[in-house]
Length: 287
Image (cartoon, rainbow, N blue to C red; front, side, top):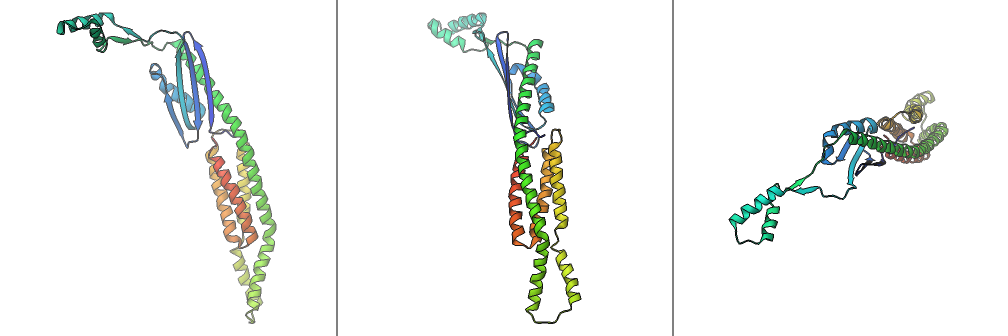
């Protein structure tokens, strides 16, 4: 079973006069890349949040957003009437003939007249945030699991196509060497020269060794089996390992194509390469 790196999770809860909601979005990334948008009141807990998400989500480009909606319709800023009155008195002394409204507008722009109320994060609210964060992370993980199931189905289908290609190449391999040998024999016959058949056979063996692809076929078959085995293992963080296996598969397929010296086999190699490229694209999204 595999997990996708792409995912989305959202959870919310009402607490007293607040509605707290948390959103998590995940995209592909080689490592853990976390970006947060957190209200200033919760900044002191950011390190805990980062550690929690790193432990649960493992890898990916993660965007975290915490939204706080105040359900109580009241202003967040209050006027400090003592400071405002003192400012107005001072302004009157500077400009005695000024209009009262003008003085009030000018005084409101001065420092410390408006006071923003901030509430400290209490333990109940922090526990609620942890619960919501856990729910959002669980939703994102489930999303990744569902997406991973679709990925796994597609990967298995493409692996099956590469296996079919390998079986076809194996069935053609014996005739291929016979055809190469016959072509060389015909070329020598056209020279109308007497040849030493024993020496010809020795040189032919040496020559055909360069075109032998049995070793590559065995290794490719093993890599395909290893890939399927990794898909079946129920563990996280297998994307990088699957990527390494696809690299080895690519080496063997390329070598088969270069050593085949046969148009039918090389056509099949092109099809296998196309399937492998699609596998590589999908593996980039595996956690």
